[in-house]
Image (cartoon, rainbow, N blue to C red):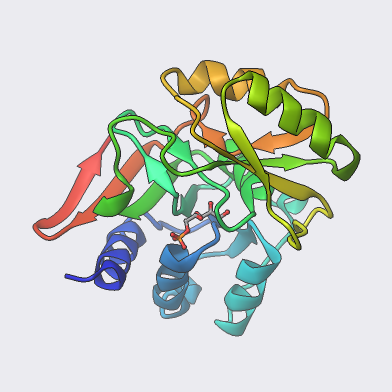
Length: 217
Ligand code: 5RP
């Protein structure tokens, strides 16, 4: 099975968790397979809350009603991908730059189902550079604090988030305690969101492998 087949398989497995109500939809190539499948079941859900402008466009093109989170209350389920995941369901997200809205939607959801292919499952997070969304004027300051933490920050040049901010991708961080690091980086002045999803991990991690779907709960 190639990587796209696995992404599609993970998306198919996530469809089973959609059970009416208002659902949250993440961002990225794996979730795009989920949106394709959701299009055929649009009558089974009330509406969707989107984690990015890109996903909003795809959902609307699929005939799915997209509403503001402020009008939605608690979401029944949130389905999203990840850049890296460990067996504790801690994640690195934000490769697509949608981490802030993704973290808000995850927080507002009763259940967070994360869909990945098995190349994303790692023993220790941090091989994938950790995205940090920053207020533009704080970018250099935040980058210096990342160096002090032992990382190598790289400014994602030419990229502006849906919130009008910038992203610094931090390479070579040893993320042995994701919950503590999320809390620490999240508290640095100028940081909007750090792409560690550990304090609120996924509830269910669906990993597509050559031998089928592995469910980690
Ligand atoms: C976007 C994300 C995505 O979930 C993550 O980048 C995974 O994307 P893909 O499914 O394309 O590999 O966090 O901000």
